[in-house]
Length: 113
Length: 112
Image: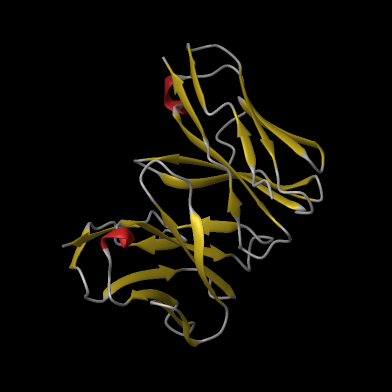
């Protein structure tokens, strides 16, 4: 079975550019989480969805970040405009329900120059 | 106080010994606790979940939970070089609509 699929795996962009990260959760999972990981701050929860509805976006750093889940099989995390401090690995994870048993994608490594 | 706290390590353990990893959490009402393993450059993967006070064993891994002390631990018996990784403690918060928060992780190194 396919796991959580994220794209792109690597993204290098310049400050001020728009970045869109994509995630396809495991089929049948109804909870989806976006995390950001850096050496300094560890794994931070940005936002999560239940049944395509955003439940808690208090971890989104600022208005430059937005996330959507238009249907059960697709989610995006957008940063506009991007800044060097946004450089991190962004993980998407899904869960059959909110149990804490998360299945992670391989991550998208973002570098903003 | 952070919601989930771990000693960042590194923790160095000789091969064949027991590795002990610890985690404390601040949300007293939380009921679900997890240990994830993350190899360098890879994504986290779930290795243990625990919901009740006491011990839960799975192969060489034992998770221990003490809700009164708000403390979770992971023991790895007969440590192998392949156990060298960062171990992340995660808590499903009771107080925040099922938010799942991770500790900063403990880096474990098994020396031959």
